[in-house]
Image 1 (cartoon, rainbow, N blue to C red):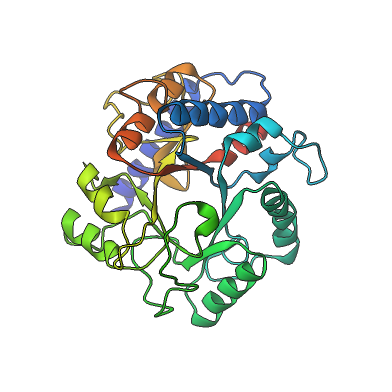
Image 2 (cartoon, rainbow, N blue to C red; image 1 turned 60 degrees about the vertical axis):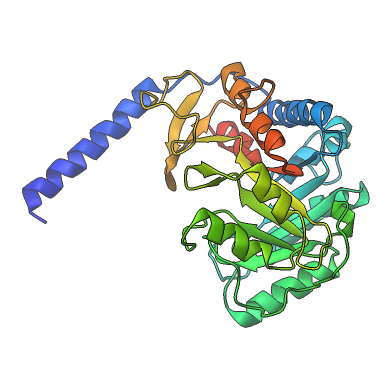
Length: 326
């Protein structure tokens, strides 16, 4: 690339970053953990008022299980009562780098909280990011020893794993609750599939107990007919289908995004995530953002409910950490 053009691009990037900083909305002095707990609890209350059997599973942020965020702290009982499971990434592999073992001290710290969840009847769904066969095997073995339901794959989450050939802990039983589940498929980016129908058919032909899927295939939402199909295993037994939904970041490829949005406009929109350029941090306590997520017929969660998903898998629950560090 021409050096003058390259320098110009750098200058434009730096200027753009500075402009984002200038427009950044002020961050109030809040108990950010409490605000996230409250947000999840309200999503749960709203969802279960429509479908009492609807499942709510936050991913990561297990420190919210106790009031002070310590493993030996008092239980956050209202939060615990609001959730049906908890998702955990990187427990044994992927915490610092994909296909690398998570440091023991981090694993032990996380397990302290996950054991609280299990004791309280909250099922743990553990996702490790590894590809090497021996590490995949180790991940499944270690999670099984803790009675966690687990999944191991590349972080792209864009394919049905080819290894292991047989689904770990595969079974033919009806999955009427998370307690019945022995395995799950976490597939958010169906870009390896030729079409919407090809995607639905491919995963439907697997024997997983639980699916965690994005609500959309590209910009095309899954339909009630898709859900009716996906809720049944090949042998006719029931399975659970959950929809992924980020509540701690806004994604500029979602239906709710408007072309005029940028940091500070609307007021809940914070800086872009430096690791995922299409994602923006949000002031998740802001009512305008919360109205996008739940509480009305146009909300994201209502679309998920109306389509027939069995529950929701909430991401960026640990978004409170970002604001605590400011």
